[in-house]
Image (cartoon, rainbow, N blue to C red; front, top):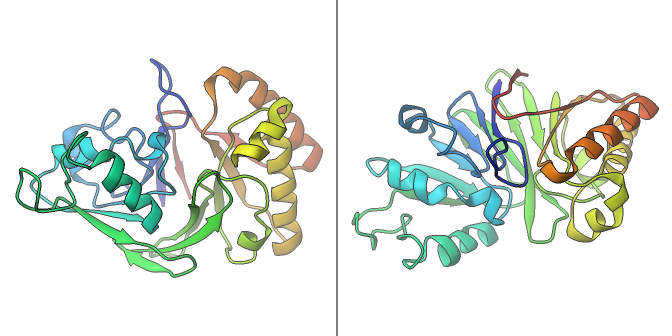
Length: 256
């Protein structure tokens, strides 16, 4: 399983991009920067997109990707609440055409909305996807993604503390976790459904207690304005708890 990180931050600038990554170049997870970081030919390879929730920084590139690929269909896999946000707020005929319907100027759907149910696995493009509920400001899911050869990735999506129920349902070889705030904003992180280094360390310690092992962890969804402090807090937490934690940057590629 090859993971290519397109965007790893919460805010866009000359040097930072919104969260999105590709699995083996065909399965996209989140759509913050799918079109700004990929050539047209690379976009053509994407056959399905997993969305954790409906916040703008995770769904932004869906309309432009549809516009750029109007000659084919792309699956959008998300819980119904997220699909509703897409339909009502972006693909609503005012901001962008409804590319999931034949009512657009194309007279055919480009996007195939595929509703997900919590804990109901689905198969897409050769991967087994298990959506699990996570605690965020809006309805949200994390994903365990299993490749044909049995490699397992878990992506938390945007989530706050309280993942012990999730840990009992998955057995990943690698975790991609959100990391939005530094420890000095731990209360804000909790209130808004996000993680900080100390809360992530607690969650990973709980994973180790439940599962008896601890996979490597890669962090995304970093707030650029706090990145230096976040990195310092993570380094300290990793040493204290003997954790293997790395940060993903735009353009990084890892193999699982």
